[in-house]
Amino acid sequence: QEASVRGGGDGGGGGGGAGAWGAMEEPSASSSSSVWGDLPGDQASARQHKTFSVELRLQSGSAVEAIHIQDGRRVSARSPHLCALLSAQAQPVADSSLAGNTSVGARSLDLDLQAAGTTVAAVRTAIEFVLADDRAASEAAFWPRFWAAAGRGRPPRAVATAARKGEAQGVEEALVTLDVLLAASLLGLPRLQDAAEARLMGDDAIAPAFGGGSVLLGDSTVLPLLASSFGRCRPLSRACMQLLSVPERATEVLRGRERQVGVLNATHPVVSTLLSGVYKAAAADAGGPSSCTAAARGVAPPDPRLLELLFGPGAGFGSSRGSALPC
Image (cartoon, rainbow, N blue to C red; front, side, top):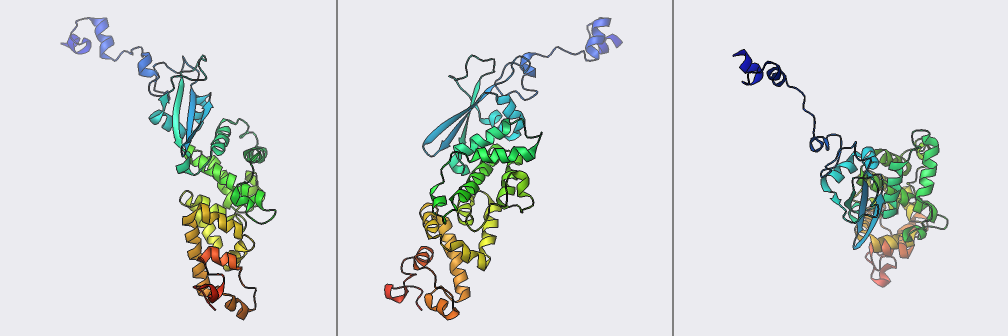
């Protein structure tokens, strides 16, 4: 009876004892292949393969651009979120440009940049951040180089050139930083998100630690940042609205930036409607935006073109044009 309990009824003393007390079995390649982070479908263990390559297919509308990452295992190790996306959604690439190396193979992952609100250049910058080896050594030296490279060679976009004279570069720098923030959110890079948020809307004591001088959110950048962050980065949108809620700042934001408001009307109609509501409410609290009200207060009348942009046709030219806001 004792032999049957120990040996499973085989009657063998030595062999029965080994089976009873759970002798270790040699693990197979298939059972150990996914224990330490191998992607599903990889039938060989990490000891047999050094790395795998990744192809990120970046979709923006009908355009598709691919980014090839040779060391996919390294990227996955540094971005758990991207590793999870690769495990859940990645597809093998039949014809890889990296064929012939010792990798497991190429994996393809589709990312929708239009939905995320970011750009191909910003995703490239985020991937460079993941692969960078000099962050731990000296962050004080790393961040200025990183942000300088992020904006290098990019001409200012239309909403930046529509700002006041001399402001285009600062507006573009803020928008590039927002692009990188949204790319970091898409790829699951919290450290890069923190750095971008600190540059955009932290205080002036924190921003220099992440490669910036003063905070980038200001009078010249608040409208473009609000338009680009609306529905995508709630903390930044909230900070923009808080700035616009200060009457003195809201007035200064619009001064000399009629072209910038016009660009936003054409490219971000929902945000333009929001701004119109904000300024209409402010104008109603102040007694109306008409030139007569301004004259009564002894201040310069608002630019008629700006009133047209904010409140609709005829708002800036008094009752002679059928204004809804006559004297």
